[in-house]
Image (tube, rainbow, N blue to C red; front, side, top):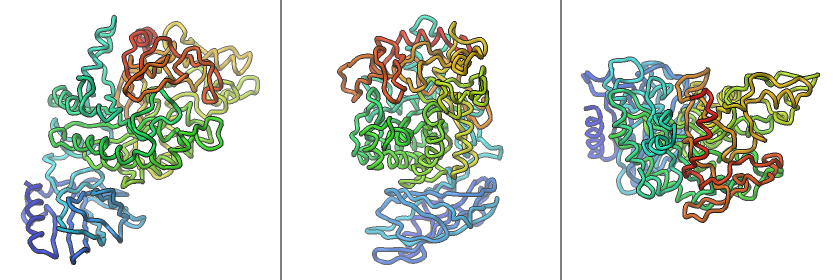
Length: 570
């Protein structure tokens, strides 16, 4: 009813000509108490090509120390100047967030701001608003109590994984179950990778995005259900690798926006799917590459220098966050590399600042970010129990070992928790949570050390005790000896929203030799077991398994090894 009233009031306001209001609060409305927030949007003055608007937000939920309200225009309206709020616009989408002096918004409290805008044709009033991702002016149908009922259409939750099942991709599940012993894990939830435009509608007869969401609704039943999507098609994608290069050239940012992100957003915004909790992992590897593989560094590449210079990684991530973050039941998590990539002093703080830059570009705000994910599709051990960064051997710090090499972190859990603190310190919300991809970081089996290494030298101590058996922490492609890690679970540790299997176990990282294909995927020598390395892996052997198919294709031998070396064991 409230949504209908909003539309009616907007239509009546248009009839008035030069002034209007769009709001759901009317005298005697018995549903007002159930409305989490209201936005009163009034056109105070209007002329041939411009208008002045006043907006008042009323917060009926928990008190806030910061806020952001969003809406979209149906016409050509553009905000030209503003006051009492910071207003940004990307296309038709507008975000207004608090100034430093008016961020506090008590329960039942209101705050107002205004702006001037231009338009041509008609100046239709917006009819849908969100406050910090929660839809305003709509009765949420709840009688209190946080995360909503079985319908899942209530307020946003602090951790989407809490109290929810997670979608099991039937395509991956069938491949896993077809493997000898695979039925032991074929019911585990994994990420759905949208790694090219064609994946939205389905590739080679496979399931598209709508088919996955429909299947998730069928799995959901009366409870809550999380669907995990990997958004992965930036222009100039993976500038420091070849196996995962994408279909879009470095300058094709407009194509990325209109042919990739916009269609995904349109599907996710379908009210049919409003009861799902949709988790998006936004553009893995992109922003970390700008930190470590540019400029005068030995690891720099010309492609990464290009992407840093043209800004399209930052713009693409910002646009994706803004468009997807405007959908109330979407939870965005930005990729934050892993400890063996960004854990060094030179990389750690600069990475957090770059993430903030991306999250406040192209109309995005920090309120569009639910959290961050580390170790996506990587192999870094979750927790090294046999040594810590504070240990020393014969007066030599563990940081001086060849394996640690002056890093501040020895495993993913310590890195993710420290990165979370750093991100909050640069301006992300204190409520952000971290995800850790544990799909292939178990490192169990007969090679798993039972205790610390010998104290004859710091290298012997670290190498003898570390679970991560890679030759070098920079090795990333189809690593020999790896095993399944911790099973997906919610709230496993402080600051961690969930352990997830975002990378589906058994899907290749890249081919071990050149394979002609129409998927835009090149051959990366890091996937070649005979390769002797480069600056990014300390000129070591690649550690890759032989006979691997193209990235994303099923790799049976790897799947079998992952099960064999699972930790905890299957």
